[in-house]
Image (cartoon, rainbow, N blue to C red):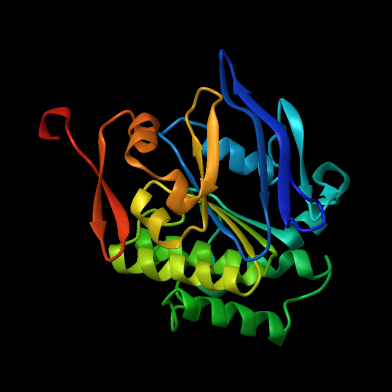
Length: 264
């Protein structure tokens, strides 16, 4: 059960189905400011649909979502956008734009429909670009960027939104190892500053390194959650991913490797 007073975002009895299949059944999850929660599971297990449901973009089959104790469905979309930022897996650039113009979209929930971005909004956007190692890219055409650079622009955009809750769908997509670590450290810092982070991750070892808690989605309705050090073990991860997972002790923590059955 969750406490609506202390949770930045929470769901209760959340059930998500697709035709012929229940992905998530009666999920209870409460995330307070300061927490970094990783969601793990195979492709098709319901991670993205769950994230979009938490953001209010998809309706659950049953159950409900709350922001700070308020039912999500009772809040205006602009209010939700002020408090929750969603980083999708993929972003399409329909219109030509510079990097700065793209990042400033994150400020739109905070300004009126007839207002222009202020110097303060641009300062926030510039700081976000610095955080993702894109200082000096502000006037670049978004179409000239590499896949990894474009991903970091999308991350800068949600940082510019300055929400209380970050919903991150595979934030490390297209990023090289150093930028994966850098970006997740940025969000870990946001958590230390009071934000609530929920991130879909494919790399279990990034979850080991950054997440305070983990949610495991098995794709058949079942789920489990708990502190990272307690919920991530060989048995659970082998079942979760459908392949043998072996723990190796490294620098006072377990890291996990997928192994073939005959190599164990």
